[in-house]
Length: 639
Image (cartoon, rainbow, N blue to C red; front, top):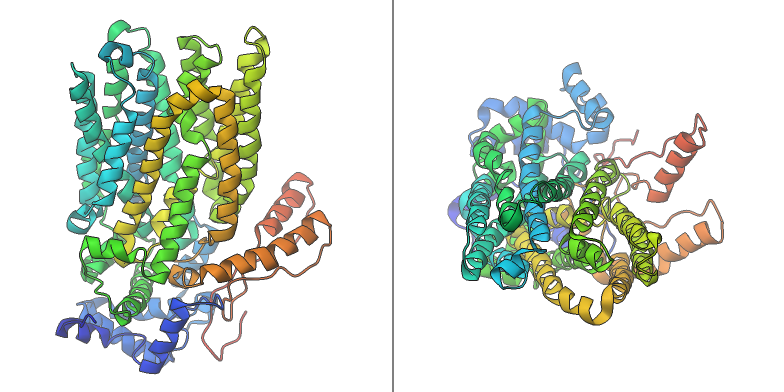
């Protein structure tokens, strides 16, 4: 078993889990959380114990100068639902905490700048994909080779599996290196004279894409508050969609440039990399990455720039520390070195129950993104529309329309991903992607000389994109960036991205042959069927993560898979059928997770019902469904 060194043993003396029996009980609940209990680790502490722990923490990490703030922050973290009654908080402190609920998106400018830069990184990703989409129509004849897209995806897969750069360079350093690849690789593709040169540049571009895909969503997830994490981390999808849109615009602009049009389509992707290279060092490093490196003073300075007030920065620093410490104790008690090398941590993705469940869930959403069929359109929309009878110009214009739809319909998820939840959005959108893709394929049976042929194909493809964008678009990378514990976050996200890129490469390699053998209608029908398979996997095996801190998700993924499946099949599904099919209102919804002294989260259906009756049917005065309230200390009454 791994033994901590003397310094680490000293640091563990400040633990909120000093009592051995308490530690064993907590570890048992985390490892096999069959009751689905989610607890605040500070709840069981008396005020004297809490203040003593805060003082020890401040002394151990050279934060004595801000100890009064840490005390107030710890008290607020212990009783987040009762902050109005905490005597140590003044009115300004309470106002800031109220506004976290009433004005969720009132956040510091630095945090929004961080999100904007991460969005630029996502736009690079989308532009790279669409530049290839347009170039597919002409470069293969010019170079005498098939599409090089799979080469790029394969490079991203390879790099995603062996990426230790986050550990060595931090989040910002890794994004900077990725931006350098994304800046120069498009130039190389634009001036390539031989297929080998083009393929090599595509490999380098794939390296940059893999690094960004691994790091940017994690960087966003670690910086933003839990209440808006989904809405801001999903900027990856919105701006990937915007990059796709810009890429289609660039393709249209240079389509009449003659024999060099494909070079311009490849090369234009360097444009968004310029502000990313210049701006990434002006935002703070991830405070959680700094805490992982035991640099708490810098982590506090990062939190100061990423939160509205010093109180919120101190609260998040201390609460995150307590949860990370509990997480580390769990790992050590299992005989695992949290500072192990990349390959050891990679094996642990499949051997530690809590981490294995996160690996399984992230793999499902990443594979599901490829199974839903979006990339047969994102990679080959020009080819697909041309198969439908369009000219090169019409195919590019139709692809432009798809990019616009993809971007526009991603925006609703900013508000819904943290209310309806990741799981709720997927369960709603997958059935709709199934039927729209199936109907789009059937439209190929309409005679080509009919005016309805191309129009209906485009319409249902656009409708498919409208359902994809707020669901399977933002969820996979948002979800995968948040589900892993800090000790395994880089390697876990790397594996998730590698999974996504591998199946994207498989799709790119197989689709041209599938189009020849099965025709577009067969391909669309095949992927429509895969939507049903993916929906089943999500229903059975995907836990919800909305509105929980990254560290509280240890409890969510402590629930055994068997327990989760039994709940969905034997309790949730029968309740849904009786309530919404048999129309028996008033049945109590069964709950998988127990929130201690908290009320459970409001169901998606309750929120949708409230929104429909209030904003569509204009019924006034309806009580708004209450959001859940976190645990309060023992002996205190819930408000």
